Image (cartoon, rainbow over all chains, first blue to last red; front, side):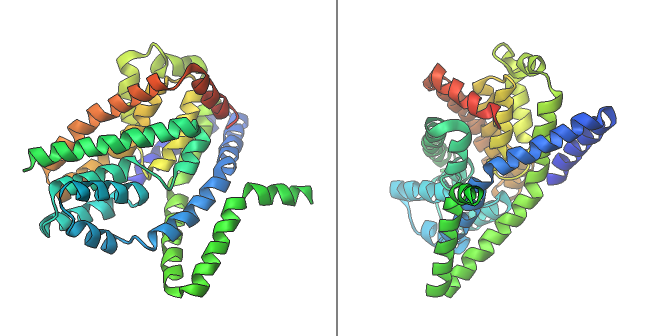
Length: 158
Length: 180
């Protein structure tokens, strides 16, 4: 699906090039500067992800979530989702397999929701753009929201 | 010399983590290798996802007038701004961190705070390829209920953040975005 984004940006880039070479060059310089600006945080986060997730592979997550039930299970699921980072095409099959092996819907919904919305590892980067308060607010609210989603999903899919 | 020092300082955290890595490799080679594997996978993902995001950001900055952005996503953009924010976020690709620089650019150009946070929310959970994949692995019902909850939750979170951040705090964030 990334190709749609490439296509969109590619068309915009070509249009820009046709209209003005000068301005397109400026845009490219801008793009590079914006990237270089965040590179210190970004490169550090890439290393951090490896170190943190080396102890939290999908297998370990499934063994942790597999036999944890009840409210504590939901909280654990939210915590695991908040500190891990994995693409959806890894997360959903994992979640589906967990459900089939007897994990609760509530725990799984909690994990998916916080995995997608909360990003503890990437917070240094978020702070860089949105400030400390903005970043903590968004992640904090997303944590609470994950709990709400978990409870509602638990009731609906009882 | 000063330049080298400045560079070292900017990348201090990076270098500290490199040392931690080296430690991991020496003490527990297995974990070190796993960590390296995960990092390399993420570097690869970054190399694929990030270039169009920053190029788009550059093009936006050069071509889109502040007035235009204000009209479509600014203070008085109303429901159009909300819909645009949802669409932009849902069409995106890649992990949430990719949305931060783009979101900051929108702020710089005069987009409303709540709309920018809606974009972040949509980018995190209502991406179209993602929800299609969710439906196929978790079932249509599971996806639909979660999607409905998310639509409400994303707007709620955006509005709360918009309310809680003070004018000064917002001005500070926009200022940061301006020297992006």
